[in-house]
Image (cartoon, rainbow, N blue to C red; front, side, top):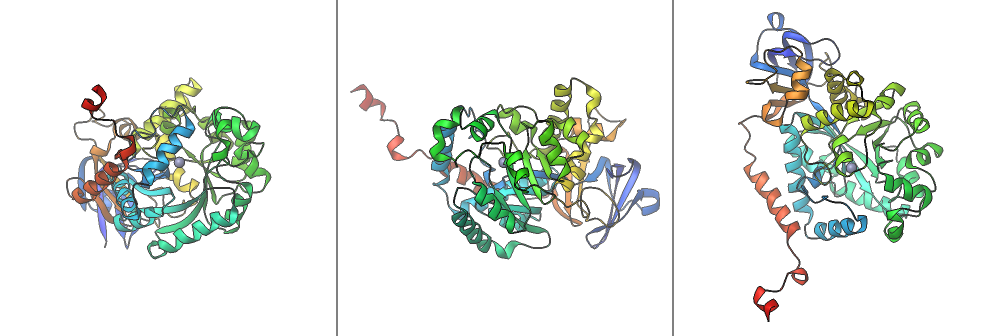
Amino acid sequence: MNRVLSADWVLPVEGPPIEGGAVAIEDGRIASVGDARDLGPGTHYPDAVILPGFVNAHSHLEYAVYAGFGGGLGDFAEWITLHIQRKARIGWEEYVDIARFGAAQCLASGVTTVGDCSYSGATAVAAADLGVRATVYLEVFGADATLGLEHFAEIKERVAGFFSERIRPGISPHAPYSVSLELYRACAELGLPLATHISESPAEIAYVVHGEGPWGAYSDLLVPPPGTTGTRLLAEHDLLGSHVLAAHCVMVDDEEIDLLASTGTGVAHCPRSNAALGCGVAPLAELNAAGARVGVGTDSPASAPSFDFFDELRGVLLSARARARRPSVLSAAETLELGTLGGARALGLDSEIGSLTSGKRADVAIVSLEGSPYLPVEDPAAAVVYGGSPERVLATFVDGEPRYERGGMDWHELTAAAHSARRAMLAVPPAAEPEPATARRA
Ligand SMILES: [Zn+2]
C-alpha cells in the first residue's frame, strides 16, 4: 500500500533533520523523503518526529518475562541452576507466548528489527506473527560440535516455515565459556549470520584466560578455558568477520578493538545489561574511533530491566560520557545513529534498513513530543533520545505496514498468555514449599 507520513520533523539519520518533513512509501519501500509541501501531508502527526525504526542489535525475546530473574547475580552457578529449573517448567507454547510479548514490547518501543539470540527458536514465530524484522540466531551450547549442530538442525527444522525475506536464520554459539572452539568452527562453516557473547565480564575473562576466578569453581558447567579471551580466540581462528555479531565487548583492549574493527565484526553495545550485571562500561568511543560497526542492544529482561529502547539509548549516551568524562564524546544525534543505522551495519543490513533513504525498506517509528519539555523543538534528536519513551511512540511501521499504533493494538490476550508463562516459571516446586506455620510451631 502506498502512503505518505508527515510530521513537524523528519530525522532521516543519513542527512540533516527536515522541519515540516514527509516520507512517501511505495510497495513497502521508501519512495522519497523531503518537504511535506512537496510530498503532501498524507497522514500528519502533529508535535511528532518521524525516524527510522530502531534496530535492536542484541535481544532475547524468549526471556521477555524474566524481569528480576537476573537480580543479584552473585553466584553464577546458583543463577544458572535457578534458570534451568524455571525453564524446565514451561514448554514450546509458552516460549512462543513469551517471545510474542517481547516482540510486541519492541514494536511499542519503536523497534522494527531485532538481532535475536533464541534457544527455542520461538523468536521466528513471534517475529512472523507480529511483523517484526529479525535475524534469529539459533543458540547452541556445549563442547560437542555434533550435538550442538544436531540441536541447531532440530530447532531450525521446527521453525523453518517462519523464515522469509524479512526473517532470516542465523546461528549463535553462545560464548567462549559455554561453547568449545570445535563447535564455534562448526557453526562458522554453515556460512550463516553468526552472533556470540564475548568479552562481557571480568569473571568471564578470569575463567577463559586463566581458568580462575569465581567461575573456576563451576568448570563442570562450562567448557574447558581456551586460555585466551573470546575476542582473541575468534580472531586467531579466523572466526570474526562482517557476518559476525559480537554482543557486549566490554572487556576489550586496544588490540582487540582493532581486531573487531579490522575484521568488520558487528558489535552489539548493551550498556544497561552490562551495568546491571556489574560488568563495566564498554569502550564505545574507542570502538567508534577504530571504525567498528557498533549497534545498540537491549539484551533481555534477564539482565537489563526492559526492551525499552529509549532507555537503552540514554544508557548509551550517559555511560559513554561518564566513561570518557567528556560530554562531547557522543551527541544525541550520534546516539540515534547508533540505534538505527549503527545496528543495521552491525547486522549487515544497512543497504536495506537503518535510515530514511529512498529505496530502503519503509521501517519507520513515529515519536510524539506532545507536552514534552523538548517542545518547541531545538534539536529533534535530543528530544527523541532524552525525552522519548514507549508511551510516546505513536506508530511503528515495518515494510510500510503499521505493526503498532498507540491505542489501536489489542494485545490483551498476548500479554495474559505471557504473564501466565511467567507464573508457571515462578511456581515453587512442591519440595521447596515451606512447611505450614502450624507445623513449624509444633
Ligand atoms: Zn545476550
